[in-house]
Image (cartoon, rainbow, N blue to C red):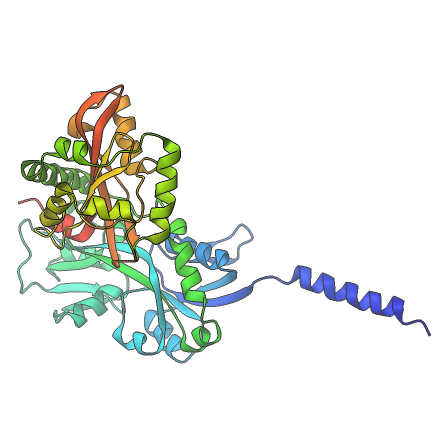
Length: 415
């Protein structure tokens, strides 16, 4: 009996099965928190979970080779299910000492802006009766930091009404969640005063069993997060204004300590783009563990020493200071940075573009969106401005500062 046709048929079936095998599926819990995570109906009338953070988690998981099955659950139940290994993961939550014992945490998947809202003008007293949503990240943070919670409610929409009635003195909530309530009749959102408290990075926790069976998932997931979060964490108009005003003060302070134009003239300069790219490749291959000869030379320059000394006067606020020439190559830096050529980055190109649009001086300043720096575990913005005279629509150089966003907002609060 000729078994070859049967064998070929079996092999064909196996090949089809392999070709059609999809990615493994993550079972994840989250909770209702518009616009980040919320329930919605699909075109077919099926309930689904959507939102910005849902998109971020799904994007990074997909790129790491996994599909997702995301469901809404009360936060207490979700945490219990995670600790019992009944689900693969749970997001988006504040760091938890309890969960850190057994589960593994990703880099932040979301960044919320927490404000204390009150109905009366003026500061919020230490004795204020604070209201929060029961089981929320805000409630857990207040408890962990020793604050007394006067009232916990089941829904965010209850808090503005309680403020108006004088039942509570302040409500702690994410700014965008509260802002979304203004579209609901009778919330009284526009009557409330907002006091910035903190930026709250929120995380995806993966269960102990899952991480034991898939040890490479978190690192792969983290690698794709920045691209999946790009453009989602932006500054409000008021925050943008405050950060720019702070940056102007910092640039002025730095200018009084260091002759930036002289530092540009004293720094190394390569004349061709080919040379720039060659040295940049060598620089990136060794940084941040080791400095190339060129990087070491720049770090020893007086301009770099002054930048380093200046950043140390603002240790929590300024994360780095970089000075580049009109080619976009570094001539001074407060510390070793990841690349030599800044000319292909927005911090340089946006300033040049602003100058070519007719802006001058600090009017040509560039302010980035908020980004997460995994090496420092901090959320940052970059501000940069032109240095020196403009020649052929190019500044003599560009000065760039990295700013910790939470410290920047704390240092720019209206008085």
